[in-house]
Image 1 (spheres, rainbow, N blue to C red):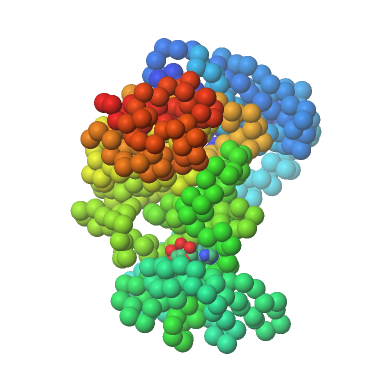
Image 2 (cartoon, rainbow, N blue to C red):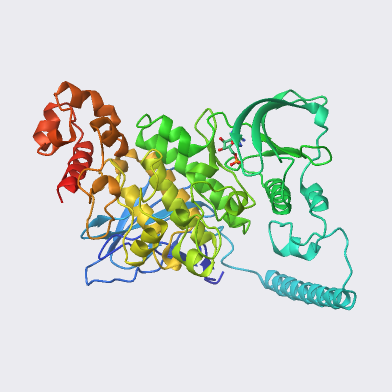
Length: 551
Ligand code: AMP
C-alpha cells in the first residue's frame, strides 16, 4: 500500500523562550508497511542558534514497560523490526542545552497486516469501484442539501421545532439563540422533573440567578440521590431568565465525568430550578483556600488533569467556556474536579467584587486572554489562557491572580510582556506549562488535548515535579505581596503573614519574640531557618516581601 501521509494531531507547537525546550507535536505518518513505521514532526522554530535533539520513546500498545528510546538529530524517525498489524505508541521530546522538554502526547500508529502490500487486481478494481460509489453518494448528498437550503430560503418562516436542525449536524452543541421561545429549546435537551420529586434542604450558595440549595431527588423507581438545586429568584430579569435556561440547555447536552451533570429542570412551576449532581466540596477556589498546603503536587496535578479533560471535551464540542476560573470548578468528596457555570451567567450581572469589570462590557479580566479582552476573540485558545490562570490558582491554593493590582495594571503589564510569577513551591515543569498557556500569540498555546496528556504524564512520572520554579524578575510581575512600595502596609505580623499566605508561621514569629513589623526588617534566611521556616520557597517568599518594604 502507498505511503499515504496521515495527519494525527492538530497543528500546534509551543515556543516558551530562548532555547527553551519545546513541546513537540504535529506528527505525520509518512510511510508504513508490515514491519516499519516512519513518522515525522514539526521542527520547532529556533529563536537562537542552539542545537536541538529529539528523544523518541516507543513501545507496543499495552506493553509500556518494554519501551525503546532513540536519540535523533532530525525531526523524523523510522521504527523497524516491528510486528505486523500491531499498534505502537510513540512519545517525542526535544532536548536543548537547557535540558529536555516535556514529552508530546502519545501518538498511536499501526503497522500494516502482512499481506496488504500485494493487492490483487480484483481488490484494486473493488477499491476503485468503492471510491467512485462514495464520490457519487457525496455529490448526491450535496445537491440534496443545497436544494433543501434553497427551499428554506424561499420560505423564511419555515420552522420545525424552533431551531435549524442543519446546525445540529454541523455544530456539536446547540445554543438557545435559534429558538424563538427559549423554554421550548430547554425541553429539547433537558428533562422536566415533577417538583414533588425534589426536596430542598439547606442553602449552600448564592448564584447569579438566586439561591443554590442542597437537596434530594427521588424519581419513581429510582434511588434517592443528593443534588444541588439552583433556583431562579422571583424578581428575575429577562436576561437572567434567558441565561438560566441557556445554562440548563447547554449542560443537558454534555456528558463527561469532568463536567457537572444535569439531572433535570423544573420550568413549569415557580421557582424555576436547575437540578445537578451534588459536589460535596463546593467551589475549587474556596476549597483550596480552606485547605491550604494540604495537598501534594501530584494531587494538585490530578485536579488540573480532570479540569483539562473536561475542557478537552468542551473544546471538541466547539464550546468556548469564556469564564474558566477556579470559582467555576466544583469538587467532589474524592477531589474530582468538574467544570460548571455554563451560559455566561456571572458575566452579565451580580459582580460585587469587580471581577468582570471592563470598559466595553463585562469580562473576567484576570482570567481572560488579551485578544479576548481587546477584540472579543473568544476561542478554545482563550480558554487555554484561562486554564493557565486556573493552574496558578490551584498551585497557589486559591490566591487571587495579580493580587491587589488593578485590572488596568494587569492589562498593561501583560501587554509589556510580564506574566504571573510562579506560586510558592510550584514545580518548574508546571510553571513552564502555565507560561505556554499565556503565549501572547494564541496559535502558540497548547491545545487542551496536549495539556491533558502532559499533566497525565507528570502524574505517572512524579519525579518530574520535584524541581521548583524560581522567580525571574525579567519576565514575572512583582505582586503586591512581594513589594511594599509605600513602606510597610501592614499593621501586624499576623496580618502580613496572612497576606503572603504564610500564616502557618505566625507562632514561629511569636516564639522568636518578633512582635512588630519593624522587628522583622533585618531577618535573614539563616534566622528564618532557626525559627523553623525550613522550606527554601517559604524563606524566599518571606524575604522577598521584607525586601519590598525596604525598597
Ligand atoms: P453558581 O450559581 O453556579 O455560581 O453557584 C453558587 C455556589 O453554589 C457555588 O460557588 C457553590 O458553592 C455552590 N454550588 C453550585 N452548584 C453546586 C453543586 N452542584 N454542588 C455543590 N455546590 C454547588
